[in-house]
Image (cartoon, rainbow, N blue to C red; front, side, top):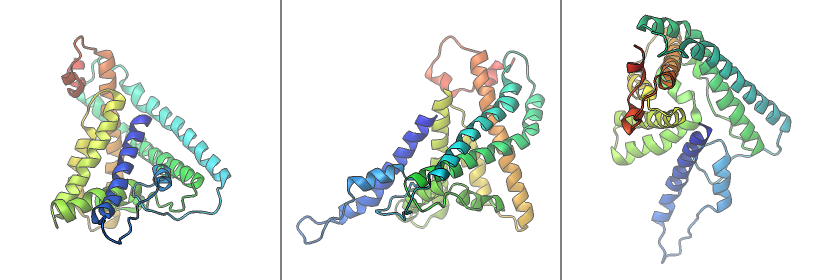
Length: 293
């Protein structure tokens, strides 16, 4: 999964670099006095490693590297990995590792999913902290990258629109700069709804691509969560702030529990119910539908 995330990150950065510098090349006239200002390789190399996906010729830099902070953040990241592994092992793998060996009725799956409501919240917070806080800050500190706005106060959001804008600022800025704006200004001018939908669609495709190749099967969980419920809930606004914030936390936690449940069930369905003739169709057809008999 790490390799898949890295290839996706490099793909997004490469697109950002080309998209940001292409207008300079297109506007340049070879037989004029105009100078062509292209970034050198050092700028591109630095951009590949800094924790941002939006290209600029220069970024704010710190004067020194605080190695004690780097050490603490990396230790937190490693500890967080073990903590998430323990949660997954204790609450999801333990519950569904016999799927396909012993029968499960839909009520059993529903009860386990609802019981793991708090577990889903822990997974959500754990992934957020180790990736968007510990990992990002560690690399930013080592590269003296001063812009540390990797997330905003998403936990105070009362609408999904604000939640998506503040949860992962790094990815949101890339989607807004290179997907939403291009569709809004060039592809479908002044069409905000379609531009938003395309940003959600691309995000869902990337998530399903990473998890699909990592687990060895395709399960459209993120397509349903992001492109289905995400797009729908993005247009709903609740006037009562407290109610909206409570509902957002509830849906985020139960959504994480549902996603983890279905991936665990499908994973063990393919282990406990192997098939003889593996085809390309078997990669896309969920095994848990026929395994639990």
